[in-house]
Length: 416
Image (cartoon, rainbow, N blue to C red; front, side, top):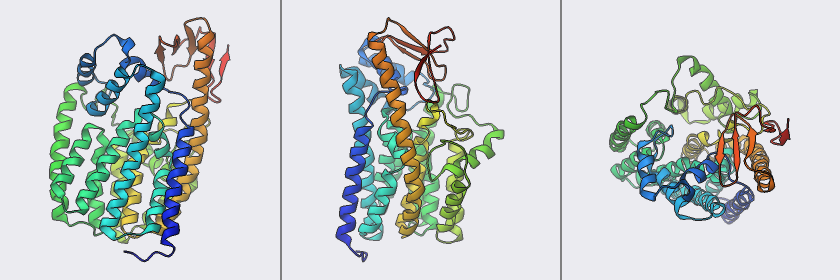
């Protein structure tokens, strides 16, 4: 057991962090939005499809991604629970539970690998939970993909700490069927080698089943969504490499693209690079972030500015896994002070994301309330995220002749 001053106080602080986070997340259960609403419409009983038909459609249809296990689970939950107002809340609760489950596994792994430290665990829990990524993943059930991968990766790391390398590799490989971000486990192994937590031969024992299942996943996926095609979410254009890398490293430790690029973003990234122990770890960390940029090619090339209703509201989900794993490496390498410092931009970003997402959801809740008494269908001009919701009688799309439109800056429903 590592010597912690005021171990009891740090333990109580960790419990307080979790309790406050839970209360804050509950307050963000305001309205189903965007992909949540579309899922409720497509997979609900009003779709006229049986559960078996839904499964067949999911397995054969590019969405434009192919993540069969979580998509099927969500679809069946929506199909079997009769009240959509109950469904979206329950599914968000599932995400919250998964995030906390992953945290518990991370802390168990840290204790197994480096002895118990209440200070380290409290700081890691704070930085992990009070981040833009954790907020969006917890309170938008469409992010079950990221939540599930995080859980499987955290579980796999615990197995690595217990020298169960093949089992860990199998878990990492299965994670591909939840989201392709599972590939981040491969540069993570390199980073763990660089900080002297695992040996090369043990990393290879983990990597073999991970790669095998990953290749198997991509072979199956290519039958539904040809990799890199126009139907794929993954586009790879050489001209976007530099903008993607620059956007990612500038926003890495605040986990959102609100506003515009700032010098502080680059400063905190350079700090994290320098905080790694030794040149080997710094090179491995740079490669880890570079790999993340490759996976998320073209995702960080534009900033949200001051537009509230925008697809970039949900961009924090993409940081969740790589940033949490970065924090884990700092924690397991006894760089608890780095976790404490990096919690500052993470918290600042989380506060901004929380406030904006609260307004975002309230805008849609107001829209749904308006539609209850308005003549049907309610046609609204907003081309970025179309919606066909026959249950609410709402049609949102590229409707220049509609009498109503969504103002993307403030989220208000305004007349032309």
